[in-house]
Length: 432
Image (cartoon, rainbow, N blue to C red):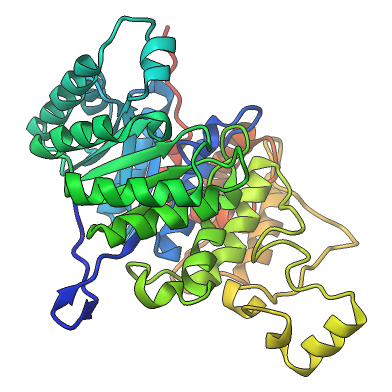
């Protein structure tokens, strides 16, 4: 699926920047971290609410992911996830395509990955594959995916920033010939910089004639800047750009390009947004909520200096700064905290607290439901009878077993509203 850019300048249709969040794929690969299937689902709910174009929501070849993936696809069919596209990540080989279709029959969007650099071909494959083998496997996988009715296939070049451009062009052109809709340029080790990636992305856009997807890591501290420069290069080359992000920048090693930082860089940096615009209706005012949930779910505090959502973003200690911001916030703030959905007071109960967990009883759960009833939207129905409450409580207990932490209000409301979906999310079927 390749959306058509609609912004015009004169008679020219201008390319745009689309966001593909990979928290539920790359983010959960982070050492020592992970998310439960319910938490991954809540990330998809928040991304959909935010207006993110696509979520790379998991691994359809992985057995323990299959019910979670199926459940989220059902949420798309039922209109629970209203706009977001859900794509799976697999290796760019026919065997993975066949297994993905078998385990997740309803999947419609896939990203196929092959390593392309000499370092990977020599050091990872140890002489078992040549460049021709890489292209042959990739194109066969694209053919297989399309033959199974997959609607869009993105092709990934792993370690693209250490791959020579001529081979990337050849790889991308082969992908296009076989029906791929995007070429993902993976700066797998954060090796690239804003200047080099701009030139490469522009060259690929011009010569491959496919939208270019930019995937950057933070090993040198430049993931956001490099992503923005790569997107600029793709658009200057005449193609739409897709930027991969993760919530709070969570990702392997030093992390990925942070979702909120990328949105802020596109929309708030000097003159950038005049030409290089976000596609769709991205709602920045959901930033605070998704950042806070991700922090809680991963168990990783947001750095105090994190753009937009860090504790110090709108804190002013210097006398000159405090005086200036009180006179006019724009003196020392590029954007307002309200734009990010901040401003609600953080309440800490100092008295009695009833938590929901794997050993919760019905009385304590009914208390929590009563508290929630004053906060929920009108279209959400909480269990009224004791029998209904017991069924929901059982799901809450299982969800707590998975997460090993109390559930947040949005999770509890999700369980109350969509118990059949949650049953599938909590289902595991290990091999005998």
